Length: 449
Ligand code: PLZ
Image (cartoon, rainbow, N blue to C red; front, top):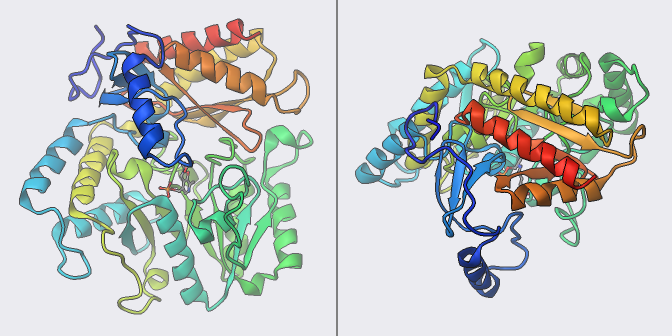
């Protein structure tokens, strides 16, 4: 039995299948889901989970699965990480809620202080806390609009920012996120992204940025833009890492034109990419940064953090919500951040990257359907295309995904064409277990060839 590096979760870190996937217990529970849960809420891998720890999930049939999704980049510190579980259980016995807008408490301020320390830039920063990523993005736009007294919002091709009305407008992909849910919020404008695999070889990041700037300048007008919102590495859109130079040129243009540069690091943040934040790889300092997911080890918490003069543009009482910065979620965040700092999790993400990258290169050598290997740290992906072309092969991605699921590896796809296979292991994933997951991926490509 392999020991989990984080030590807390006592669940054996192993892949062990005792039934088919999904097994009979999960199938019975699925029938209840079908009866009581709205069909719009689907499940990618319909096994019912009874326990999670480190990098594994245990289902109702007793199968132990390797978790390569971390609940979509959430359990970065490991599932049920010790420091998170301890702080949550301590807090839950003290008080569960007051509403920070009614009577404040330290946990919220402690999280805001930690955010000021770990987010990019050494300027004075403040934060406001919310429940979900979409809510953070919405609030970042609200803050930028008040600060600039402008309306327009710039976003990018392939972007994902959430499922609320404004963030649906900001999200690029129609199915499944937007279909039938309009009309959408106005004053959202989309610019071309830097997508190295899908453009003429050698388009420099600086040139891709100028291409985007030209669209925004000519179609919107820099003076009308309140903010530019960008995922420094695309999440749902396919783990696209923009060409080097793209982000710095956009940030400089925003600075020169009084446009608030907002990095949406909801998926890429909190040590996931081998730095604390994905913008850190190019030394870009955003005016505002939105975070969620990995911030709290599995509890719902999100934040907008940024320059004091921008954050404080909003009148007192202008920001809030009943649950934003809930004390239990804040306790979880403090445990998660303590773990990231204490265990140098950015370094751990880089170690996982080197394991995944070398294995993926081996698999690619045998399977030219893998057109691109990309990502940073523990945020890696492969894009599947007809060999030698950029024609998406979503069917193969689905087949590879289904094979991995059947073998007890929880994997996720993404991308505008659904042809990207992504890997988001917990940073508590033992090396051996990650290697075993990669063995299953290799077998999946062989079996579906
Ligand atoms: N911004 C960059 O990745 C959430 C979405 C899953 P919420 N991504 C997972 C799904 O299909 O709903 C995300 C993101 C980026 C914003 C969000 C939104 O975060 O916490 O899901 O609202």
